[in-house]
Length: 380
Figure 1: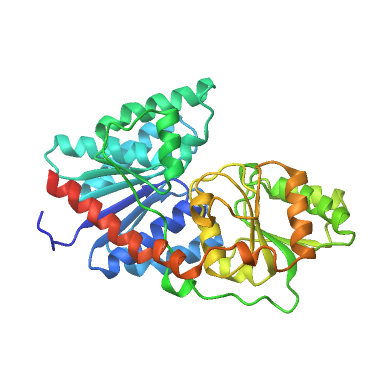
Figure 2: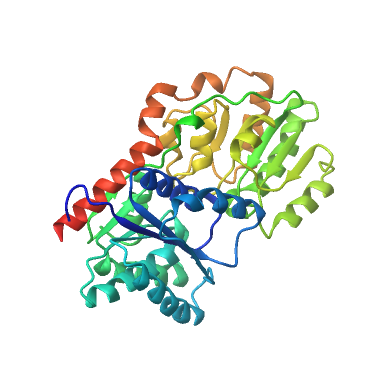
């Protein structure tokens, strides 16, 4: 593999929503601009109008095309037929690099890539967990089963790619010290995202933006906002942006608490549009790896209140004033009340922009990823 030969890169992941989708889109765009040929293979049953627009925007960069197959979240017999179809599609594309993201994408990439290697293909197999199966509890039978599968798949992995040091440490704790080589490559943002977002004239107090599922903490956001009103001694307003099957349940809870008129529910939209709708961004996640939404909020100059989970301290710093424990309604409510009573509290603790931009740019992320791909291919 010569140093300057363009690579044929295929990314495989399950659900085209959230941080994994954002991560792959940024890599695909940067690598396509650098002259590489890129394609995506993902699930056909998830996503909506917002994700369809994102696919439209990235299609000009996908010279290897977009392939969508039904890929279920949980393990099942349907995975066998999906794996067979995936093998056929990948074989036709003849990639140099297969990069799987998340548990399902990682499994398909390593199984399919290994089968191709039997046919003397020189394809390299990479796996980025992005949390995924690492969210499971190692004390449960399901968790132990998933971790055993992850351990088995290591033997067919050319390199693991962790997006945060927290993710690497979690992998070591739950699965074991990696037997495959690994590299830490932080997520990054595009240059135009390092511009401040100005609040709308009618901006509300707090924004929740993310998937509408309990893992991300929208239920905690709702309960904490109600409690923060009591602590602040006045009504507060919020907006919740995102999609998910549990969205009606959260709306019902807002209505029950009498917050329906002060907290609006909005469908998924570009983060910078959502940032303009509120003065402070709240990240109440129970678990994370290296969430893009925190990177985007910091780059946009938005004050942040966040749970101290996953790789978030690698973004905001270990001494960040706006950290609260995950699932702690009282602590989050107190921080929200503090933010509305003292507008200078959070901005004074936010990361310095110059250093932040140097560490978390999409160009840096993409360059480091290509370097890893080439190292593995040259080593072959």
